[in-house]
Length: 519
Image 1 (cartoon, rainbow, N blue to C red):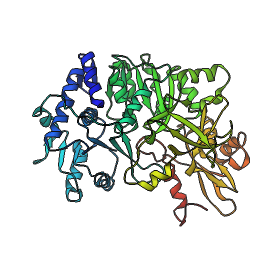
Image 2: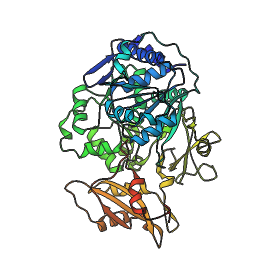
Image 3: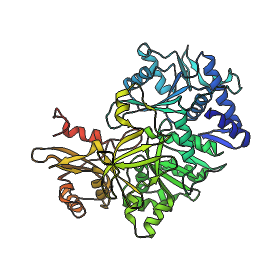
């Protein structure tokens, strides 16, 4: 098998259709196919072989897409590096993965070259723009390389991608995704109820395409659609792009949607070209979902998944959203949907038995999209994948119709007075208060209860609320032990590179004086 071959097939069927847009660059499928052939051949000409590792670190740009497809064509293992990694983290990724080549934009290449002596396995540096003496220029490499398709075959179980993620531990670890995993991702993307990406449709990518946002690049190109890459997330730039380019699909995290809904000029743009607004990677409150549907129309589609499952494993469809509002079942907006296509998903108790409707257990997953394991982490792999089922660490409940409701991360559970409190449940109530813009609920040390529930809150601009008011608001909807015991008001909450609130960093401030992070 070879995933790159399918892009060449798209070029056969849609040669003149636009495959990729980035700023003023526009590549037809025919051009894109030729360029990715040249890149694959250029990398092979450096003495690389199938199975060698190619790392790329850059802010969003078209070359990231070309590198992904070229790596598929040549059978290389791609190492997408987050653009926000520190130099120490980037060095760890390159050494741990044993990457042979680094492709980077100037901003990232300069510090890597300055740290060259500490990079143990990197033989070649390829620069996407201005190239230092002695290094390889990306465009020149393409210009000097053959245009023939490289006939390299891989097996479904061969490694395609090492995706480094800190998860909830803070320690960078690599998720091993195979070519079979990536093919399973493409298959399930075509099975989303109510969604059919067609030739000429434009999918705008605003999140980091080196990570979760990039999972949908290949399904779009399989369909003859166009991937439009934005260099960064900016509310007005995004809305203007949707209006001007007549964008049809977009994927965002809830924090991005929050910023759009709060922007004073959001209503000035024509967004009528949109066919679906995908969201995921973090919970979104029921009131915010209702507000987003009022703004975008009945176009919201939620996906729940993780890098370990090669993206989403459940879907809450646009119809699910609409039915929840029209059939007096707004509670369903808190669900992440039902399992999609080949993904088997169960919620189980500590003995591995499926829980009854309404009971809380851990989400476990089985299917062709589940990772091979963690790179160089056999013990962690054994702990995570048991009897063929991947244990997510996410706590959830299921209703009588099979809809899954994520309650929280297992590791984020607050134990107060012997009772389990799931932060997301409390955050949902806080978000229903009209003054709350963002909220993060954590457990803090408490001499009496072990941990006390604390809310760290950003208020909407121009709105007011007191600590007592927010605690009383939660008290009306939650059991007494779940309500916050205290509220801190802040101007900013730390985010990870995907836009999710970094609960671990919020929590750290309150536990800094403790030797253990439990009490």
